[in-house]
Length: 419
Image 1: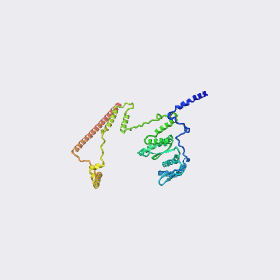
Image 2: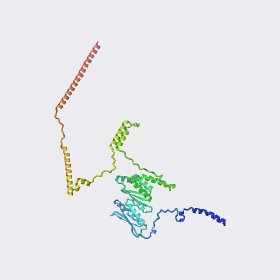
Image 3: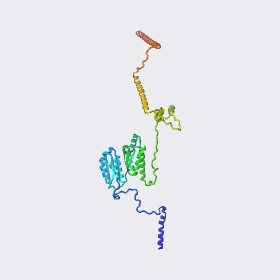
Image 4: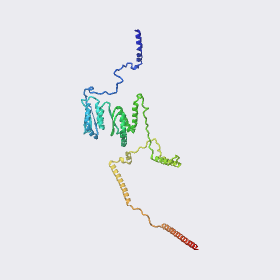
């Protein structure tokens, strides 16, 4: 018996040593057989009618307005909306006169949170979300977010351009956002409506707001694609993913000035292909740049702020108009206007009279100097004509003499042939 007891004692020493290694902060903690690893504490349990058999003590209601163009669609599908809300014990009304939708709890309502889901449903319907998609908001685990983007950009053209970036060519960017975030996204007017899990809604809001701040959605799409691939690796579950994510630097590229751009382009075209540019062209370019630099003169730095411009009251006090009576002010204003009208009328009359002023005719009276000049011109012309006549006579005489010589030579040749 002693041997058995000793063997049992020796075997029980191992668990005692392991129990002593427990942290002192957890030495009184007992095992909870109902708390195991396969239990997800973050799941939202389904709320059933048995959980709340008694009706609510007070009625809760919400209402929202909708645009005029949405009225035909809501009128056609309001029966489907009513039937969907009756299943969860919520009543709804459509007021076409005021252009509003309202939801309220009834005695059949058992889920205290469903009224907020119904409020989100009518909000999505007013923002042009189709009913088959909007009714999914009544499910557990589906939330919505309406992002207002109308006041983020002042310029209308710039706002339309950035809003179009969210959609992308043929809706490709919007489709990529929906696939990566698991949310339904609808861009309508000045709002972006999104439906899906809370994590996806957070990413959608970040993408939309950054897009309206001139950050293209493609950067966030690349980041989400990398995160999705990293999530598949269990080794990286407890590590930081910053070293894998891309880091984009913002680059502010200054636009080239048109004057300097044309000068450099002309200099580049004038240089030979070999790369040995002429010194003259480089000097001309330097001179042009120097002249441009000379035109830009830096202002003298002064630590004092610029002088304050006078106010309208200050100018009136200087001219004395501020101390005038109302009747005198009106009279002075009328006199000023009358004087300005008279000046304008006189100026217009002078402009109209210019059309009737005859042009100045040239003075055709002959003077002694003009007569002397004309006489010299006539003499030169007469001499030129006489010289041309003499030249023509000489040429004619030469032609006649050559003809006689030719005739004499022919006669001599004929005599020699007879002999």
